[in-house]
Length: 417
Image (cartoon, rainbow, N blue to C red; front, side, top):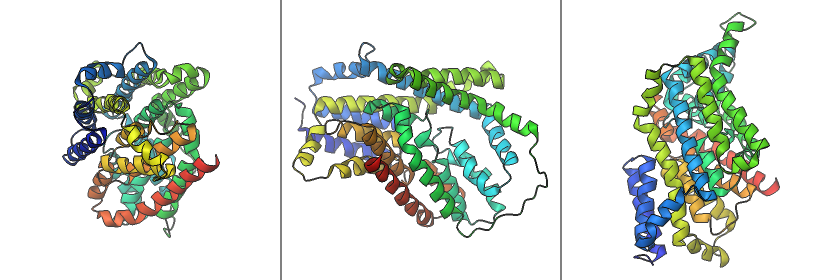
């Protein structure tokens, strides 16, 4: 028995989590600190070391999966940082703007491509590029901010090496490609909604480039700098399709990212000095620590029987299941300003209530993701508003209807797919 009742333990732990988030501490610290506090309050102290070890125990399927996901998260972050350190991400975005002549299409594609790098507050990287292209259409600051924020986040629900998606799939025991298939209609609505709302009554810009065709060198440059990301995606999807057992153990993304890193080293002719630089940054370890914290928190919640608290409400008919599957992860994504945080805590709460079928897993993930996307605690949201000098109230005029339409599609997929 723990020191206090599980209901009180989870309430105190969630309040503690909110305080840490308010202090803007790294998500890795927040999740692990919350997990330890919950363990101290809800578990027999003699059991705590065993629960911690079991989280990444290489002799168990769950432990092996957690270890693979944590290592894959580190590898993805390393790939992301090296793209930034080598300047390849700038080359990638510049080549796109030269290949695509339509400013509207460029404004949709650029933030999404920069979004391939899962860096906290990464919308700030695409903001100057969006600002330049948006001037061709004479867009106001609120439209610029909306396009930069919204289109940066259209890629992640179907991006095979997105850390939140990897963690979500692992925690719910559903393969990444299966979740992605159910997110495709949602992403299509997300893109269409962003285009319609972002460019409503905006006339086409006159082309300032008389060239009818794109130079072959520009296309070749794009393919070269994009190849490490493309190779990573192809390898991850191939392993998931051909060797599903490896995918269930988390080895698909881990292997794919290692291959992608090797490709990046070859393409960029990376020096050891540049390769070593990301290892000196706390950011790469913070995200990796957050991945571990997600599994630790889930393990402690399961051992403490936290999910049984919510199971009572469902069995008594006091709370509808759909409300729990959507509201819990969405609110947690909103509060944490992180899809990974929303998924980690949401799945931990729901684990004892439902069996995670593909449809349920997709709904839980997209709910946490959309909650995070529109959260004022979301760094991309804050940085974008600050860069374009746009009040949050004006930005929400575009974001709220986009959220509603996208979420409606997620519910349609859940009920009818």
